[in-house]
Image (cartoon, rainbow, N blue to C red; front, side, top):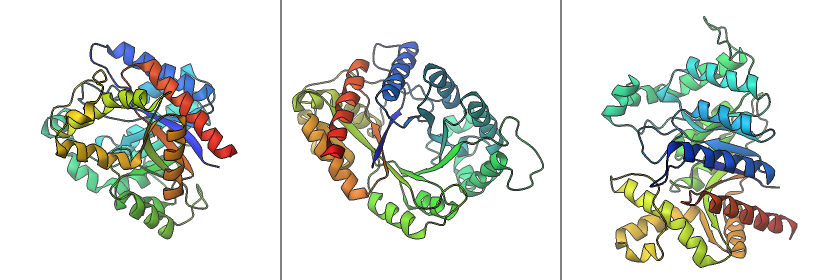
Length: 331
């Protein structure tokens, strides 16, 4: 049976504050737990006014204290921004604080201009080339499988669940080679979805962590009582995406009725493209969209994404989505 989880970017809305953003994320995590979701992940982004999850491990510690059962983790940590030793310490600490609940999703995308590279004191494009070695070093720091000249404390012996993230064939190939579960970021980069999952399943090599391939796919889902209301909710994230791709990112804007009708053909095509991995509408429409996406991907898990300007509306969207998906399972 397909399992469901939540990805949150800790969105900061226009007219809102960082404190409000963290409070909304915490409320969403509590709701996800009470609704029976398996995981609640936070993504690492830097120097973006509209996203507050840059200090990912700190945010996860706060969420861990606010919840009691749901797994919490990174979706993901961009390892080129860090050293394996630092991440081993951070997530070793989280594992000690919240044993049996920590996921460590890893990505390699540098995604940074020269200003951020200088701020992080890293050549991120060069660091990305060492990503496979860094993943193996990080795993060794946690498991002790290899004799390393230094011990991470906290870190060594931590039972974090490692995941490989990706939006291309590279992550799929590495996940398969290392025998790790694989999460594909179809919610913003669906181009290589089918090919990546096929490569991962074909080339998977069993490991101590995982006997057979395990796939999670991320998709944007906005559910409401009516299709019109759901499309209105989705328009805030759509505006953010268009602004980001147009080189003018900012905070999460209020929804706009009929937003897509105001866009150029190019922008409409852009949104239609990422809409391959989306379900927007009523319970019935969302159920059909999620069901079709699972049928397409054969996913073991679905990661639900989608920022709304009204934080309560996102919780209600999650409630309606899970209600619809449970009906799908029971049918």
